[in-house]
Length: 370
Ligand SMILES: *Cc1c(COP(=O)(O)O)cnc(C)c1O
Image (tube, rainbow, N blue to C red):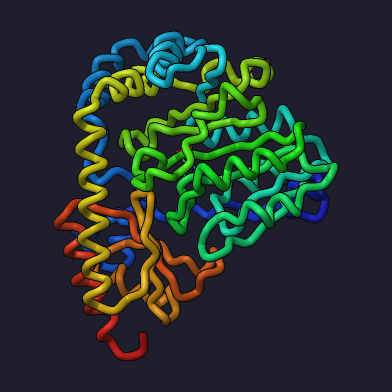
């Protein structure tokens, strides 16, 4: 900052390390002199957006001179019907990220604490710090969220806890039984936020779906998104399901147009596109099974995943593997900044993309120096 700058942000803001967005694909390709690269780095839907959603958006472009429907009337009612919850429990967001921001702004003040797993989705920490509250980080155990350790970290300053189901980046799932134990032992004033960005991909029948607890327990807040299984990450639409009283508070501070008009029509159409959803889930599950078998063939340790990505341990610096994979035109995510210096996370792609990933990986692992 220049010397005479008198405008200062509070210390708690300056403590936030900025989210570092990846470079655009085109930029990476130019930099590395590659083309036809495939991106298996951000857990996006390899099939693209739901075709019904795409058609609905194309039609809605004609109305872009109008402000969006600030109540999200059709989407909220459609979700309420599909999820079998009262519409008053729903809050839409500009992605589910936005709902996390609303929850932290409405319910945390400086000095409060929020307990979260580490490594985890970076936005929990960023939003908690941005209101001057303190994140309390609880390491994973056996790559899964450690509910017992999280309970131990709860103090009289703790206002909320973040759980990711299934977990990113490890792909583990919390069981219903463990969650029920947690509910019994957690204090009555604790907001329990369950981020279910990947819930559609969960295969474990014992796995928790937190919506089942919403009616019985006012502490539970479920977050869902259209970014992954519905293929709508770019248009930004997600939602939270919660006690109607909590929803009412979020409505007070929500920007009236935080769910834009294309996002609203896209989400409504995507909910009607069950064929696309089923196809997405099948592509992901078949892709994971293929990739597991290939990892076994290559003797590479991996963690079975309940999401649309998985993590593998290459026993060598992940950042170097990432660079070399990139030169092969395959973009994955190094987990070094997440505390797994030898792991990469790979999003499941189309069958031919998964094959390309395996071929590139074999090549890279055969190179000297990695
Ligand atoms: C991708 C992802 C989300 C989705 O965020 P949106 O803002 O809805 O796109 C939320 N939580 C986790 C853990 C994710 O990985």
